[in-house]
Amino acid sequence: MSIRKFWLLFAQTTTVALGVLFIIALFKPDLLRWQTQAPSLTIQQAAAPAGRTFAPVESFAPAAQKVIPSVVNVFTQQKISSPANPALQDPIFRYFFGDRLDTRPREVSNLGSGVVVSPNGYILTNQHVVEAADEIQVALADGKTVPAHVVGSDPETDLAVLKINASELPAITFAEPDSLKVGDWVLAVGNPFGVGQTVTAGIVSALGRTHLGINTFENFIQTDAAINPGNSGGALVDASGNLVGINSAIYSRTGGSQGIGFAIPVSIARKVMEQIIKSGSVTRGWVGIEVQDLSPELAESYNSKSAEGALIAGVLKGGPADVGGVHPGDILLAVNGHAVTDSASLLNLIAALKPGDEARLTVARKQQSLNLNIQVGRRPAQRVAEPTQRP
Image (cartoon, rainbow, N blue to C red; front, top):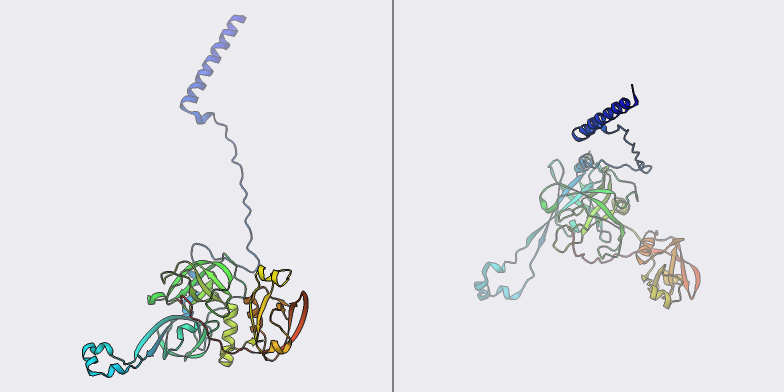
């Protein structure tokens, strides 16, 4: 074969091959793609912290089924008499106004919720739910309604304990104190607006809320789980159905839930409950001082190096602090070695002291630190202002 014929054959073969590739590329481009293995993707899954479990996001049914039998509805009746007025006895006056001047006692109903804390009939609720009630009825989860009486109440934390004549009740499980974290799922269980047992879900928005003007002793859990009128005294539980708080108050401009609800943490509720069941009341320490938060401006005026602590604005004459040598203008830094961050923390530290015991107060006076030993007294009953919104 001559070189001329060889190159002619080669050119024809190449032309045919290019033509075939063109047709394939035009009508079947997938045949020309190289088959390569897809790259592997490895996602690192964070492990749950030790000792904490999380409910699946698809359902809170197990937690709800666990807690619903332990939450009860509390119904109260209160008789209110209209004030007497001499003008009401005038026959002419009564002729024109008639029955509108009826001064007979009338009944006012209130609705709330409660939590069964013991199989033998103890129920934890809010103090404002049963305050001044003449009659209390408790509706159990099985529909049975039984009378109840108040064992004791604590207006300064807005907690009360009821007792019903029953046994083998489904008592709620208490969560470990301080186990709750911001962002955890929580369920609020109660009887809002009297519609019946209701469960709402949300998260923990904040912890340790104080200075709200709701109670004397405040350390609230804030949640966006819907809390409405009738939910007071109901349970706030974690995703496992364990009690973490008692629903107590809401922030609202309309009277309904706006995503800001407050619950009393289980750490406070349990201590108050146990004292009430044991003795019918709550005993707290008292030293006879008036305090206020130490702002940066006040700290500067008192030559304090920081704004930590609480300023003693007044000392009751003859009280434990006065006898122990505490002076107005002192800055209280610690109680028995526990640091004071503000007036709210100081109030809780003093209240936790046992009356009759000796306590060591660390104060700053004229840029000097002093340790003063005082005899703790018993906190007298305090009048509690009515909050803006009680659900």
